[in-house]
Structures are given as structure tokens and as C-alpha cells.
Amino acid sequence: MRASTALALAIAFATGTALAHSDDHHGKKAAAKPISGEEHAFGREGNPEKATRTVTIDMSDEMRFTPAEISITQGETVKFVVANKGRVLHEMVIGTEKELLAHAELMKKHPGMEHEEPYMAHVKAGGREQITWQFTQPGTFSFACLIPGHYEAGMKGRIVVAAKKSPLPRN
Image 1 (tube, rainbow, N blue to C red):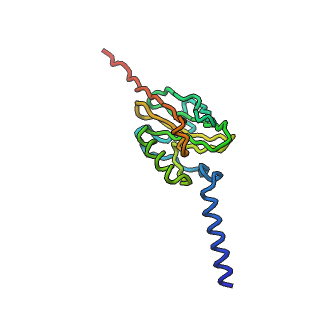
Image 2 (cartoon, rainbow, N blue to C red):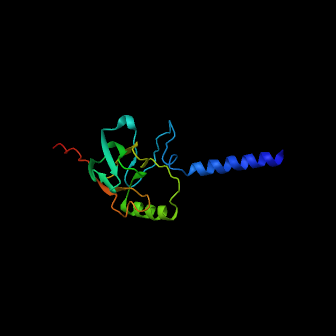
Image 3 (cartoon, one colour):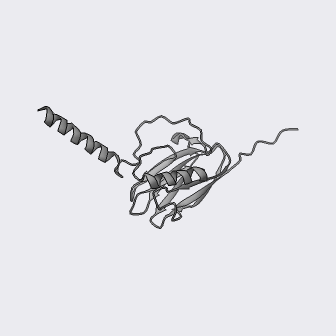
């Protein structure tokens, strides 16, 4: 009896581990997850209820994002609706060019690795996901699909964040 129980547990554990690395799990976000206050060079997770605008980003199997460049004002909270128009898994990851290059190299070494950060959306073929991000710093940042081969094929874009103009002092 103990051997059969151990075997059943081993099978259940192996099945759970295998499912943890499937495309179906990749990118599912937990419901009611608190908003992270972690600050990055390119901003922080935004509250969807405080988004000042929504930008739809389409991804395709031609390894392109549409639009490929977005202009934003410092302090703006943007809800990105990321739509996969292709037949394979794509993702949108926001970051600095240096961070995205490093992450792309890591993905080549570990293509099945799981990661779930508020600046990432993993979108199955035909699916849609959302990222809500507050751009707290001015500068030029990037977004890309870091699935092995996609970034190298040109699946990347730019986010230009203009410095917020301070009001003119009164004389």
C-alpha cells in the first residue's frame, strides 16, 4: 500500500511540474494581486483604475509590434492591451535596452522558464493580456518579445517618455 501511495504522489508531483512549464500557465496572473510599489528605471506598476489612457499593442508572427513606438508623458499611467494576432506565443516585456538584452540571453538558455512580473504580458495565440504601468522617469525605454528568436527577428519597440513640464514660476 505504501509503495502505491508513493507512486501516486510521484506521478501527481511530476504531472504538476510538467504543467507548470506549459504555455497555458505562462503568464496567468493571480487574481487580486496587490500592486507592487517596486520602482524600476522605467517606472512602476500602475493601478488600472488610475490609468490615464489605454494603448492597444498588436503582436504578429511577422515578429513585429504595432505600434512600434509610443510617446508618453512622465507620470502618466498607461494601460496596455496586448493582443496576439499570430499563431504562436508572444510576449511584451517593458524595460531598458540593457535589461531586455540580458533577459533575452537568459531566455535562450532557459526557454521554458517561468516569470511573472507586472511589466510583462505573455499572450497565447489569439489572446489578449494587459499591463498597467506608470512611467515615473523621463527617457527612452524599450519593449520586446523575449521568446528565443523573436527579439533577434526584430520584435521590439520604443517608449519615449517626455519630462513633465513644471509650471512656470510667478514673478
